[in-house]
Image 1 (tube, rainbow, N blue to C red):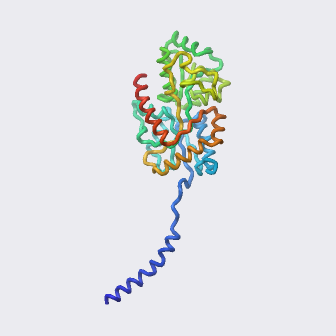
Image 2: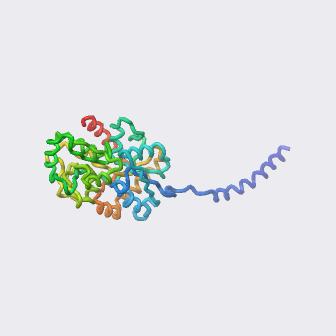
Length: 333
């Protein structure tokens, strides 16, 4: 009876064992990342430097995997408002950590806001993962072509004679523009009125062109593309930008050494915390290759946008150093 039971069991199991190799051969292969388009959220409006560089430079290059891309389409979605707060808050609270929902970061913006905003936004360096950096865009002080201010000295003289009456705008509070404003105000010993533009840098630039504010702090790249309609008085950086604005002196050259490169706007790509490390590392490698390609370099140069390519490890170090420096800077300002 025992032998009969054993033989019956063997007979029942044999067909299953015979099918096992065939089942293994027909099992679906694990999909390789990325297998579908990626969404890249921009926390600023259309037409500004971040949007332009992501939409017209990064996104078109992404599909060309054989030419230094990532092999998938990148779809740009704008979520502007409150100097980036709206978009980054929504991203941290709702984005899936699967590598298909990414966001453009702006530093010092999101780090300064996480430190200095009394409302304490949801995002901070601890719940976001850097992937790769593509640019480093200094702030510049601009006035309209018809402005009474021909030089930085003219502007300072007016501000000293008229405390609080000189209006200067920028793309929100606790952004690079705002930090440059605060540094300059303190260094010059003047009192100005900062006007944060809720629609971002592109609209802020338009307001300066139209004479709706007396001055503005904006991105070098945006100012470069509109240089025929503006007067650019100074660059907030440690040295002149010889590639795009070689004739525009720094604040330090004009006697305001405390205005350094703390406001330089680093731009890149990040993911929500929890995104698989393998995806982060692959994206970092592919994006660095893409940002370093001749196509991207050419497009960035045409846009007057300084290129600064960094991989994931380099961006992690930059974020950490910026947070340390900004804590000291903001407490002082």
